[in-house]
View 1: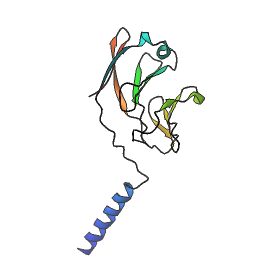
View 2: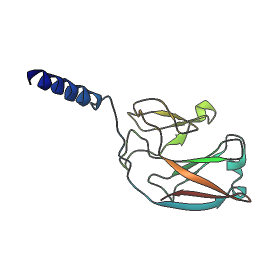
View 3: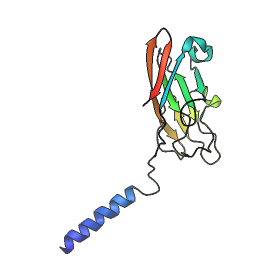
View 4: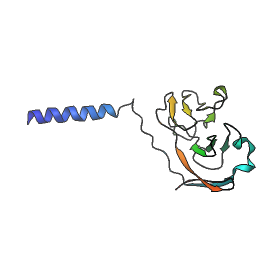
Length: 145
């Protein structure tokens, strides 16, 4: 019985350490999104490395990114480090030729790829993605249900 309690204690201690301050779990706020747009109306979006901000939808707004292959990705502009609404919205990083997304908030400065993957900084998690459906003729549906 004593060995069982020691093993149980070690297992619980290991589990607790794995969930310590170095491991961050994001509790994304829920927001339903359904936004339609035609990319032909936004020339800045259709060019190479094009992107645009949609500030009227999402939690902190949406960043729509041209994948340069005829497809698009969408992410919320809320950083995975600061999940409060008072942080600054994520922006495309001009210093990297718009190849990275950055959190300009003081104390964060996390970097993410154009695919929304975590690269560096305190965030540790990827960005919150939205689905993007190509409805044909340049029409896109950005959604999260």
